[in-house]
Length: 372
Image (cartoon, rainbow, N blue to C red; front, side):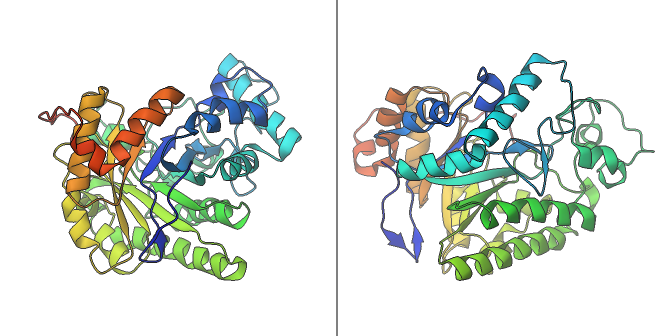
């Protein structure tokens, strides 16, 4: 179980990375226990080639683990009217009381199973939220001036600007400092193997017209995290990787303020996940591979559980393309709900390039409506 122990360019190569969106915290009936996490999550990867589980720890700066730097789900609410919210808050509290908290438990369980664990931080979110709801986020409620859409701005409903108005605007130092504190706590206070910065949920961080010019601000944030990560690694002897999930081309990334090519050139990131998997056959994974030449950065091709990537033959075809483009591994998003049998069989198929060549595959044209 788990990733191979070979070292490539001084970094561990994990053939398969898989993201879990943290579903269990709000869907499981309380009381959720560490043993439930083992049986329903970690054990489902037994016998699979998954090298790391990238576990989403929250959304809209509201988190489902024992954070001190951020806001825990439900912490400011004495009464929660919504049944799902009640389950979520109760499960977080129950795990804190039982074993220190959800992330403490997940680190222990994953390491015992031989799987690395990366907390996954969603770097922005444009989802609508009732300001009085526990998922709205105190930071945004208290600081509306740091959102992409300022309090006095009005946008046409359904427009791009309307859609991104509720997201954080990273031109503000307060936003960058808040996110740096949350990210740094994850590797300072927990024995994690890395952290994923998910820039695909959602991929807007500045006003549209200002994004390219402000890419240096996001690079400064990534530098800040890398510097602190290196300090912790040096002090503890731990190897900690920084992964980023970004749009499907270097140009798209730069256009929205993410200078991924610079991040790789400076050695700021260890893993780059190319794209969200929405255009899996057209994502130019090879351009990321070429940009990473001469660096220690590893490139992963993404597969999202969205048509066409719901049939095994198509998943194999996408994986084959990613391997042929020179990817170091495959990253899967939203496949956490698949059965243990599927994870063992299907993931083993796409992780083994030589075996994959002999298996049936179905190549398709992408639905270019999903450009991200």
